[in-house]
Amino acid sequence: MALLFGALGAFFLSVSMLVPTLPLYVRSLGGDPVEIGLVVGSFSLGVLVVRPWVGHALDSRGRRPLLLLGSLLVAAMSPLYIWLTALGLLIAVRVVHGMGLSAFTGASTTLVTDLSPPDRRTEFLGYLSTASILAFALGPLIGIEIAERWGYPALFAAITACALASLVCGSRISGPPRHIQ
Image 1 (cartoon, rainbow, N blue to C red):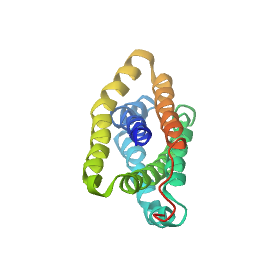
Image 2: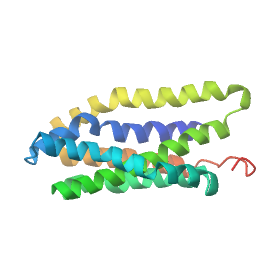
Image 3: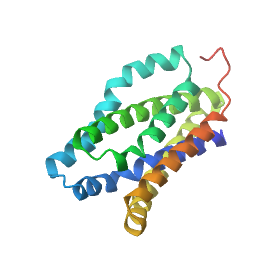
Image 4: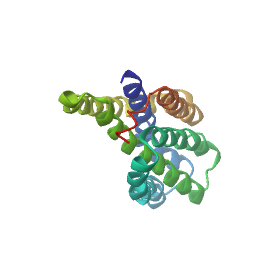
């Protein structure tokens, strides 16, 4: 369970560091408020488009593969922000990034319920919420600090490192017993 919560914390830290910094980054590239909104908002499109597929895949393919896919997509998309600076490309990166979030969140929640003892399931779901809330409390501060001190390349490297840490933790998680899937 510790590996799962490590994967959760690292994943949500990577996502939350972008919350305050991505609008500033797009503005630094010359983006106007509408373009900033398109780039930031396109993340939600990615989340929503694949959500039905994620639900089906969690039952048919298993939780761990989707958890790993989510971490892998976020790790793969994170360094692209620095290289793909055209508006359309940033929107595409955000959509795929959102798809990774959708896969990861669906898998992590179901894994927590699968792996926790039935009489402590609600407690463990509380830990899941705490891990994500802590990451979202600290991530924006960390993201802004990194961007201001070392620049956007360092920020995207840190985001990528967190997503990779999530992938490593997730790859070491044992799946739930076969009968659950």
